[in-house]
Image 1: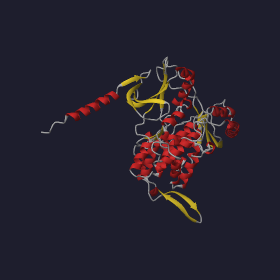
Image 2: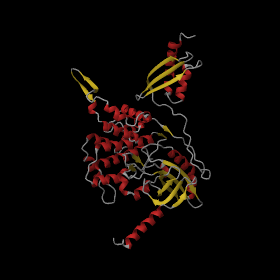
Image 3: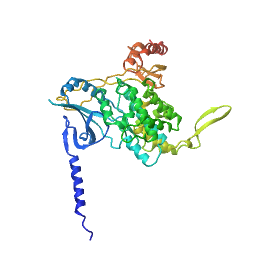
Image 4: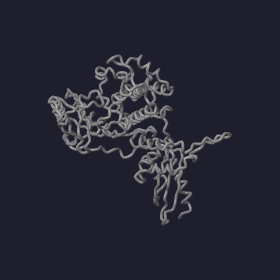
Amino acid sequence: MAAPEPAPRRGREREREDESEDESDILEESPCGRWQKRREQVNQGNMPGVQSTFLAMDTEEGVEVVWNELHFADRKAFAAHEEKIQTMFEQLVLVDHPNIVKLHKYWLDASDAWARVIFITEYVSSGSLKQFLKKTKKNHKAMNARAWKRWCTQILSALSFLHACSPPIIHGNLTSDTIFIQHNGLIKIGSALPDDLRSPIRAEREELRNLHFFPPEYGEVADGTAVDIFSFGMCALEMAVLEIQANGDTRVTEEAITRARHSLSDPNMREFILSCLARDPAHRPSAHNLLFHRVLFEVHSLKLLAAHCFIQHQYLMPENVVEEKTKAVDLHAVLAEIPRPPWPPLQWRYSEVSCLELDKFLEDVRNGIYPLMNFAAARPLGLPRVLAPPPEEAQKAKTPTPEPFDSETRKVVQMQCNLERSEDKARWHLTLLLVLEDRLHRQLTYDLLPTDSAQDLAAELVHYGFVHEDDRTKLAAFLESTFLKYLGAQP
């Protein structure tokens, strides 16, 4: 007969069970009842000014989220800025990007003595970039260059999205502690806080080890997009070398940063990082331009467009369509070739394309690692600045109504138009192909009415954001000549 388990061990297990039950206790609910705050605290984001972050439950979706609290000791000061705070948070709620931790909802809670802003964010449980780098260094492994490129691309995609908003959103707290890695390789940067609510002085006093992520001008001048570029450059350097040695618990020295830069063997990587760390903010490149740097730009836009198109219509195809198609391909057949007279052509055969790599690429696109917006032209993303309803009326989460149409900022470089008779010969079907300056092809179709004119159609395309305002006259003239060609002989 086995000996009975010692009582002290059973006691310790019982204590752990009690602690687990205490952490799951519901401390508070949102006004709408959807979000339930638990006792367990989490460390996600390290946002300056946020006094506490708790694990919470989204009762509608059945997933865990983070309950963040931003406290204001001065009730009068809060009341003076209450409208501005609501406006800023309304803008942040609208931010939706696969590489940014989602801010789901916020509300205000004010009493006579104090006030707080409570906001719910997405919970990322896989850990921060700093934790991942420490584990990698502990195993004595060097950083994989391909992983480094994928991480940089995703971070820059998020920053490019924020900076393209109108007005631009500055993250202002980008460090290896505020970047998270999911199990599938997807990177997410922590939610941005409105610039008026960030506290550089508090960050400097409490987070000395993170001061090297902030540029020399930080806290002295108004934050611009260049602040985030410098922080990104320092994150990219830390990802490349795994760790920048600090002097104990104090801040990282300039000497340590210099040694880390000099340890980079890839000249393209070194030039890429140094451009981000330029001391003059005006000399730092934009996030959008960095996405096309030669050290990162390795996925052709046509390949990415094809992958997104395939995934969006995958429901129309068999589950194993890629595997079946590749089995039917003659591996010795020529996929593409480059003529090089008088030398033989350079040929690329199907055998040189790995089916496993194709499956992995499609999976990465499906998981959001290669967002299509990376390769869009830089254009302002208008976010409506609508005030939230007062707390007593905000019983249910309401999604703000976006602006109906965005203005097109890209010029048309090529136009093609075709008119075909319908089967009943009663109307004409118009097909318009536009090539924009970033090589994006836009195909539009329309059934012409007897009352339609070229000028009206051009004005409507500008109104709905399909064509740049400057191209209105040119497009109207082109449509007019097409109408004369096809309809000139019509009564």
